[in-house]
Amino acid sequence: MLLSAIGDSIVKGFGVGEENSFVYFKKNNLKTLNLGENGATSQECLRQLAYIDGDLVLIYVGINDFLLNYSLNKTIENIVKITDCVKKKGKKIILCSPHRISGDATEGWCNSSTFISANHKLKNFNLILKGIAFKDNYYFIDYYNLLNKVENYDNLFFDGIHPTKETHNLMRKELMRVIGDFCV
Picture 1 (cartoon, rainbow, N blue to C red):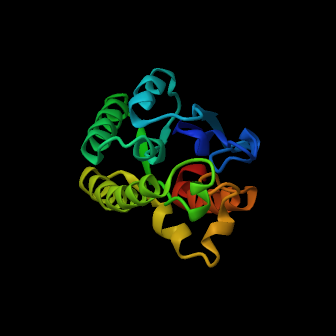
Picture 2 (picture 1 turned 90 degrees about the vertical axis):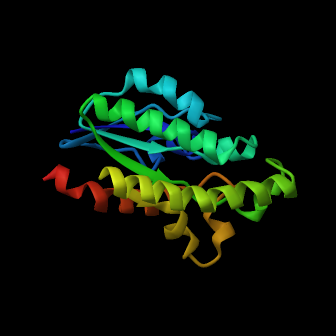
Picture 3 (picture 1 turned 135 degrees about the vertical axis):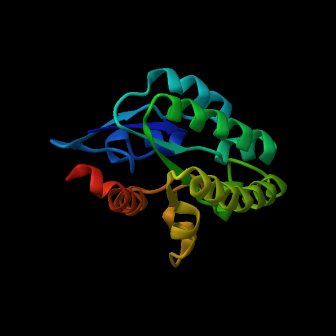
């Protein structure tokens, strides 16, 4: 089985290497086509759709949208365009809600008002994505709440945004739990 993963630098494995990204699999029965791009927004993920292949498509995007102050409505509109396109290609969809950014992100990535605004949008984005996934019968991975439950949240990221190798491993475990039925 082939998993196409579209999204941003987190999908790409920024800072830990693509081979350590949470979407990376290279087993006999599961391989990954990683289409993640550093800095990608939901608008740019529409372009990534031209390259998807395989049975499953994972979508993980939104943090850059909100760091760039894109509206929640525009980002959701792009997500719906992405999922509609994937659905028309007859592929299964794994919709992922991105994690919130940690306070360390204000040291190099954004100022405090952008940080507050982005996290507010990410919280609402999570709820809306969950509703879309339920309504349209997509697989859903709630990384927002999964990681939010971990003690010492700031330690999950090496720069406030990008997960450490250990955090990618935690995220991969959840992904494997969701797609386990396909790998049998």
